Image (cartoon, rainbow, N blue to C red; front, top):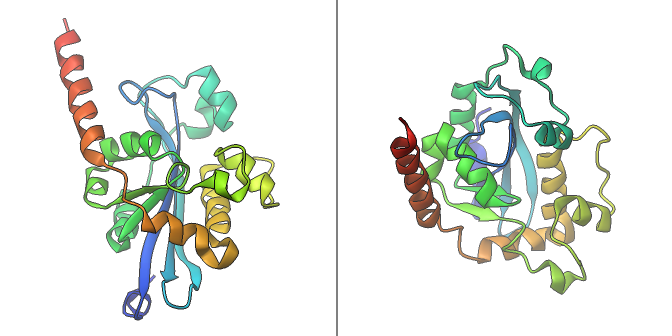
Amino acid sequence: MDISNVTNNEGAIVGAIIDVATTGNNYFIDEIIELGIILFSYNTLTKNIVIIDEYSGLREPACIINPEASRANGLTYNDVKNMKLDYPQILYLLDQAELIIAHNVSFNWNFVTQMIPEATQIPWYCSMRSINWTKYGCNSRSLQYLLSEHKIDVEIAQTVHSNCLSLFDLLSLNDANYLLELLNNQPFAPSTLLYKQDLFKSLRKTAVV
């Protein structure tokens, strides 16, 4: 999709919402098996926010899927067997994005940037930690709780794509003031994560016998 008409609008920002499902929680050994992206435009003057493109895909990993991860994301090996992500499409969408939003950036960043290094060049924002949800009367920062509190319908069979759509709906509420608060905070500091990533890589090398 040609988004030149969006990015040229005065006050417009193009962002990407990303979510992933993985074989487990340890990015040192686990891998992405599903990835979803919602590309959106937000006009800081009019507060108009719209989806302009989206992508979701499955990927067969080179490691086993942890049973706990499978129960959480609903994916089995049969679901992802022989599946591949469309990397050109992913890179095309990310090339349009001036920022990336994820609910729990530290988890998503570590997995995404290992597979797509280009994503390190884009500032990341955390919708879980960079919005003061307590101020809005929320007792938890978990996405499912926030969606329930805001009466946003969630698909019974949750996927990373549905999570991205739901997070978009959440950030769009209240004249997009949630999104505005998020963007008024500093982006997530990738230097710490890069250090951890390099540390784990070095540990992996020294652990090889």
